[in-house]
Image 1 (spheres, one colour):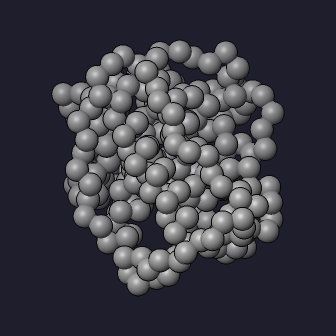
Image 2 (spheres, helix red, strand yellow):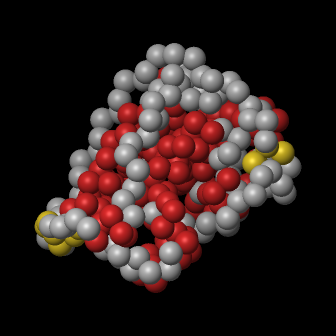
Length: 253
C-alpha cells in the first residue's frame, strides 16, 4: 500500500490571496509561516512513508538503510576513504547486516559519505550484485533520509528516533517506460524538463517521496518555471543556495 504524499504546494497567486503571518524560527530568524507548514508537512509525510515497503525494499530494509546512513558519519572505513586521495586506496568493505547484504550496506555508506567520487565502474559492480532496481532504491532512500537528518541538524534539533518499520511487501513493479538514456541506471524515456527530475524514475514510489522533498525545499513544483517567486527566498537567492550546496557536496549532476 502507498499513501498520498501530502497536500499540494501553494502557488504564488494562492499565497498572495492569503495573509501570511511571519514567525520566529528556532534561531531567531523571521520566516514565512506557510513555508514552515509546507516543509514540516512534507518532512512528516516522507518520514512516515520511507519506513514502509517501497518499490523493491521492505520497510525493515529501508529503516536499516537509514541506520547505516547515520553510522556512516563516524564509521572508520568511511572516514579513511574520505581522507584518502582516492577511496580505492583503502582496502576493506562494509559487512552485511541482519537486513542488508554486504553490497547494499556498501552502497548506502558510499553514497552517504563520499558521493562526489563514485564512478560508473563502482556502480556497475554494485548493480551486478543487487540489480539496478534495488541499487536505485537504496540510493533514493539514502538521499531522502539524509535530507531529513541534515535539516534537523541545521535547525539545531535533536536527532529524530528511527520509526518502527511498516510491514508489507514491496511493489516489485518495473515501469514500462524506462530504458537506457545514458545514465548509470535505467530511467524514464519520455519527455522531461530536466534530467535530474527522472533520476529515480526506475523506482516510482521512492521517487514520489524524493520529489515531495525537492518540491517543498527547492523547486516549488509547477512554480519552478516561473522566474519570479513570491516566497521567502527569491529565485536568484534559491539558485545561489542550490549552486553553493551542489558545489560543497560535489554533486556529479
